[in-house]
Image 1 (cartoon, rainbow, N blue to C red):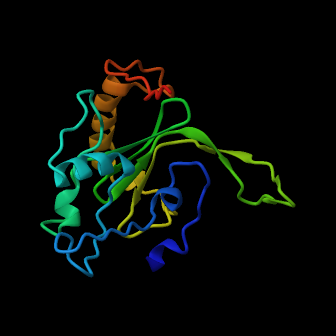
Image 2: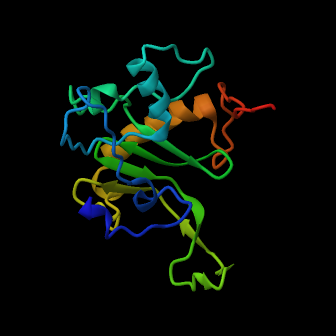
Length: 191
């Protein structure tokens, strides 16, 4: 993925440079050799995909992932999700990927940009950065997320904001003090 090489990786953030990573899968006679797709999937989709491949049941508790087997098997390249929601920090809905679009909501994040990254095992100090207004990027033309075009596409911003409102009703959003109706506790494993 040569296009990834020039992305600025803003560590522990929701920017593309952190999330856009190659994924290699091999399953002889099931995944076509040489298949290359650009459709994004996320880690949440791996469990449902494996469950479909193995004809197994998913957990009874609700999960967010969906099977991406149609993408892996080459049947089609359509995402199993209408959108991907990027939560970070303490339940902060910071961004949404919707087709070729990625929208960011105002939030703060830590960055090493312009900082000494450290040496001799001692890490450098992070700076605090801020997304001050809604930002929209067309990832098909601006993979580096360098040109905020929210003002040019208010209808896309509105459409994504509707998706955000629905998700905030489900899972909440600490950036807007929204309480979700379907909040779920994180998995706990006991010995």
